[in-house]
Length: 247
Image (cartoon, rainbow, N blue to C red; front, side, top):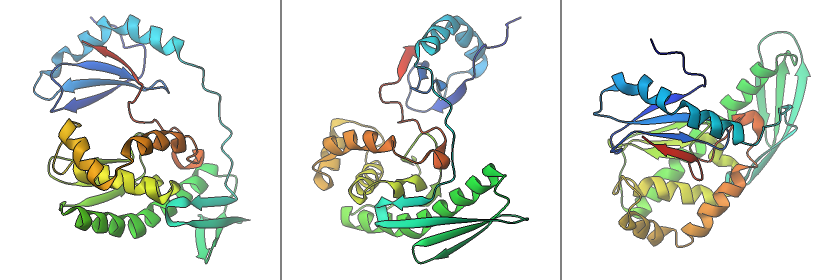
């Protein structure tokens, strides 16, 4: 009988992966990428065979300091060039949020920090629906491409994604980036409507509408570090620079 896996991990099925591989992000997130058509009954054995490697890499990662996440008093949505002053009112009952011009007031039990954070996250997500959806539609029209559906989420690991069914998902946290980097991400995902890969043809098409995409890719990683912790808690920069083990 196999012993329990001594670390947390996630399984991601991939239609493009030709063989299994293990990735470890800079924050210690372990993911087993598994070819879609390969039987999953071998997953436990694969993890056990590579347990020593995973534990060694996890032990070598810099220790993350516990963040004391405090309620924000200012929220800067650089993507829409809007800054909000945030005020709090300690009252009984569920949190209520009122927006007036460039000011937000949250009323509720201020001891319940998680409920407060969820209220702010919901507000940011609604802003994403309000601004990112029409923004994506305008860029798509400029590029001459068409998608099926768009969803707005708050994700910990991706700025956006595009499926084979031409559905696009965008991270509401994009609004925390400067507008030119938001456009960079939108162009990237819309180009995936033509190329579901990162081939040379993909980057050639990206360059048609984002000539500075190489510089913007670098800047995107820098701005990722400034995303408010209350919004994402842990925000991994995709898998760029992640440790990886082929199986």
